[in-house]
Image (cartoon, rainbow, N blue to C red; front, side, top):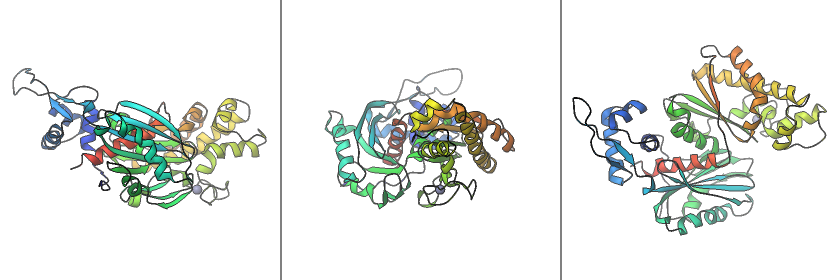
Length: 375
Ligand SMILES: [Zn+2]
């Protein structure tokens, strides 16, 4: 019977696999890229070789000294399955050890109707396939406050769940370990392994969509906080007399920036009498009134991010989430607010990640891979 895997703060082995996914490297190159000691790399690579996840290539002699042994990832030696749970659908990706995708699927989902059975059914195809025995774990990314150490969804307003022990319940239905985590944090892990983490040890991930979240990476560690509650950036107070937020307070950042909040603000300003979704907002984004609304919103977002940048002294930010399509309209206000508000590093390295639903799922797959090769 699979047990609940220990949540793994140390992603080192997964980082080594992700790094080797770009091509073979020897141990000293791995140590230099990841800022690790030689003994640490030797220990982790020995374990990965024993698992059959990496292999040694022929030694290369170049100049004096011992020949260097390049290491190569055996990408198809094991797979992980990542799911992203959305209020209306689930996106799944089957991922190789180097982070590349084997398969991707999408199924409808109703959070009110036996979610464990729906998610177990969503995984069934991957286990039934010829390669099913290679699937070593299932990672699930969800919106809300998630405690990955117990596998419990503490609070997810978007799914309408409170205190749901999803991880253990799903693990009883599947032949492999299951790990659940907040979707922004899952994507932040993917960004550490395959994105900004290739250049930066400290960075932020700003997730904008039907909510606002923040992933925090410091010293190549994804910050979770006690019980997984860190990163509730959407509820940073902006103005106590501002619009009502989904959390019941007034004037949270999310009450200005979330797609539904933008739509409500556009209606209140008389810019539209329709209930716009994200596509509707994007279609009107350059129109008079809307352009100002979005620039103002970018400035509100930029002031809040500047506060975090000042406190943590990070130099890079990656923007993800459904609403990244609005970034060209948010960016002018955002950049001006960062320039005015950031003390130490006004040249913040901001990148907008071409993003789709599967990004959170790939992050979830990375998390469960880290957990499954931890020991
Ligand atoms: Zn709030």
